[in-house]
Image: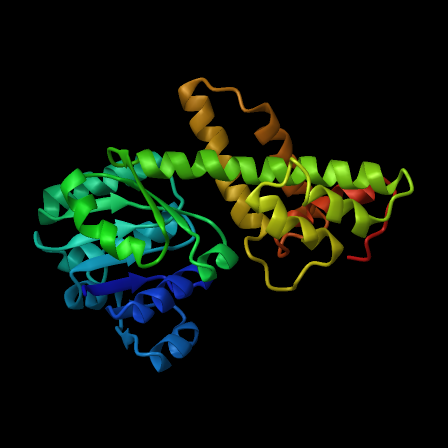
Length: 296
C-alpha cells in the first residue's frame, strides 16, 4: 500500500479518496475549503494544511482542480506541490486543463525537482466512480506509469497509457466534447418525439434502451425529466472543456462544428440563469426554443 496524497477534494476527488481508503492506502488530503474534507477525515484520511504538506507526507501525489489557473495555484509558490517534490516522488495531475500547460508543468517538475509528473484525467462521473467503472488516461514517463497504475486500478478498472505528457489531457478533451454533443442530439430527439405527441417519459425510456444508448445517455438522459440541484458536471465546467477543445482544434487544424454549436447552447444556458445545473440542462434551453416550458 502506498502513502498517497490528494489535493482537491471536490465531488470527484472525494470519491477517489474514498476508494483509496477502502483499498487500504494511507491518504493525506488538502482542500481549499476544509469542511469538504471533514467526512473523509472521519473515514481515516489525514489532513494537511497545504499542498506542500500533502507532498511532504506522500510518495504519490494526486491533484484534481477546476482549470489551468487552479493547477498553477496548487503547484507554485512556497506552499505549492513543487515546493516539496523530491526525485523519489511522483506527481499525478487529474485536472482537465490546457495540454500545453500540462507539458510545461511536467518539464518544470523535471528541471526543478528531478521528480516525474504524469497527467491522468478520468473519464466518468460521480456515478461511474461510485460504481467502480471510472477510466483513466495517463500521459508521461512509462516507468512512472507502471508504478502508479496499481493505485489507479484501486479507483477504476481501466487504465490506459496514452504516450508523452499532455497526451492524456488531449484525450480527455476529445472524450468530453462528445458528451455535450451527444446530450444535445439526445435532447433534439426527445423534443421531436414529445412534440409528436409522445410523452417525454416514454421517449426517454425508449431512447435509453435503443441503439443510441451510450453509458452517458443511460445515466444522464433521465435528467431531462428532473434535474437535481447538485450538478454532476455543471454548464460552466463543461463549457471550459468545450473551449479547450475548440482551442486545440484551432491549433491542430481540426474543424469542430458540432462542438462549436453545442458550446453556444452552454452560453445560452448560462444566459438563462441555468448555468449551475448539470450540462444536461441543455435540454431545457432547446425546449424553450421549441415553445415548451420545463418549469426551470
